[in-house]
Image 1 (cartoon, rainbow, N blue to C red):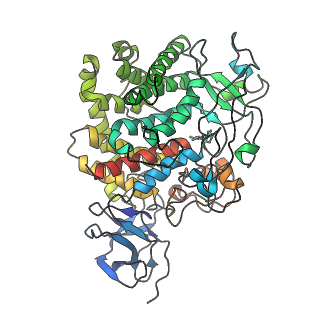
Image 2 (cartoon, helix red, strand yellow):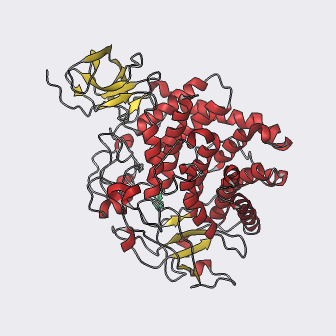
Image 3 (cartoon, rainbow, N blue to C red):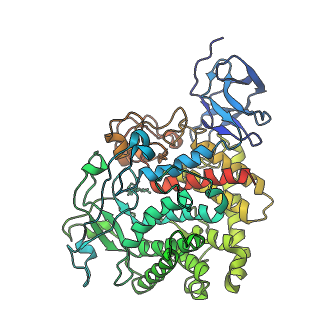
Length: 568
Ligand code: 9MR
């Protein structure tokens, strides 16, 4: 009988590994059997029984599960549930997420400032360079004796942060830390990821070349006279929905901040380790990065109270700056991250003992405002190369990773979508897609770096969160533009809105479901208040459908790491 497409069948729209868990989730109380069929619906290759019901703890909705893990044959299929219909098609094959990893890494290329994107690399999204940032003004909030307000500096390159055209050091911090960690954790695998960028033919992995585009910008954000780092490079207000080359308002660097400076120190210290093997391709850069990190650290020690507070600044300077704040009232985690990276790179115990690395038992999920756990990842991954002070704490660092992973998987076996993501309504914050990806990374770090008896479950649930991001979720979207059948077509992303091309720029991760989005962006069209369902694919929905570099980076890590681990 004719089977219609059913959006009630939620699954990873890209695919599954032959030997891993393969689950689809039905919204509603469908019962009986399901089948796996070829996409032409002519041939059934597998029949199973729906299990459940499960109750979604957030929305109260009933779901049923189709588990076809036992079917391992490579191919392209749909799930068919009689009475409901068929799902989108997906693949079962080894390397099923390799294109996702490459595509999400390529997303950064499209975010580059200050360089033409020719069709050779950008296809139909080719566009002229925007924001050369070779003439940037020192904002009055950033004035110093050597650089009075209005001084012109060059601060070129870098990526656009998100759907807007500004460049923010704090958010670059965790983004770079995540991409550099991928290079550090999977140095062999990253060499195989060809993203087809202008640098693809050099001897540096493309992911690292891409990161260098932003690293070289970051270096220009440090005041050479004192080591402090400007919080952001920005217009006074957000641009309209125009192409980058049409957005030509004055650009400023704004107040040096403690969080920006410490994040910068951490990134530069880590970059120096990652770049050392590539010294021949980028002579001297690794050394320059350590020097920059040390100078930043010393500024931070001399200016520990310089938090960034945009509201407090307003009215005091001309012009007022109203763009993204990345304000954070607590720099203790930035101290921990910077100390750990500097310690591991320099092997100087003074960094390790300068701050309390273990102020309490918490192991917070990484985000732009909370980078403490990045320090624990770095200590754990550095293991035997640590000096005695660090080695002594290694068991408790690993214990923390296990504790974090165990608390993530706790109860996931009963979650409606079989994922760690969405156990709690609290997961659905602004940029929740990055929560899912960062949970996945936390599980992978515990999988890689500890001997926990739960390791295989960590890996299983890391993959589950990738399934979440690619469609097995309460809204049925694959949140990565261009990947899957139901994906965001209208992200809050200026080039995607302004370029006149129907498809959005590909490889960009929508922030995704956000319980408070309606109140935050006031975009019309929200239809529910169920925390796990508040998402609309509309470009005015900047609180649920913007894209951002700090959301893309953990997806790159998660997809690439899962791919790399398949071949282990
Ligand atoms: O990702 C940020 C999120 O955690 C905050 O709640 C939100 C509001 O302050 O801002 C988000 O960051 C935005 C930044 O300020 C400007 N560029 C776009 C970012 C993503 O929406």
